[in-house]
Image (cartoon, rainbow, N blue to C red; front, top):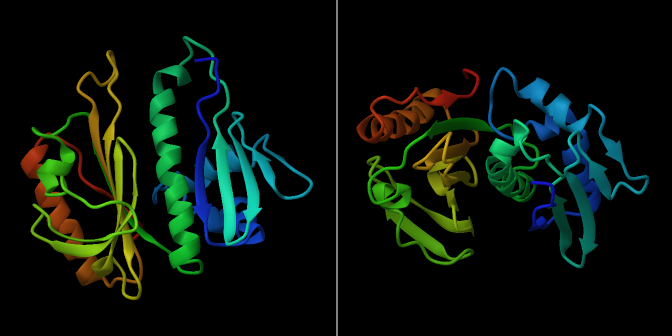
Length: 249
């Protein structure tokens, strides 16, 4: 694609300076971008600091690759807009353009969540992805097919064996974000479930992605959550790789 994709935008209940810090300090970026991997530090450096350019007023950041953050102060916070850079047709990146856009959609919501709910607390992440979709769809397979609108309360009995509750954090055609009261020692955690885009050559049936962000949980409780999700994984995707988990506690 050579055209810019439609800008992605999220309203955050934090001032522009707080958002800017979360975009310019590597340790802060690591609390919302992606998930915990040994390569996360290198990924952050490549995207946000290698050949990146900052606006003099701290309201604009062009990342390596041309994706552009714009911060607009509003009455009760900051509107953060991300405009995707251009990708040449036929390039390796063009194959993954939709996936990258979907990733940024998740990451912007993680940025919002980190600032509004846990601005100074390290996260614990659990991640799963597989190039297949359960029969009936990922939300139906989890017991999340009938969720209310964003901002509303919910309670659900997951097919993982857990009962979770909180608020619907966000929703798109392909992603559902839920706050989860039992995913943090204080406050709540965040669950993002996504159906990944179909690729005729790379992923003809689409894919499944789950990203769980927890805070302050002890090893036992974190192990229970991960064990429940791993049972769901092996039931629906017996050939899939194991969950990707954060650093040991």
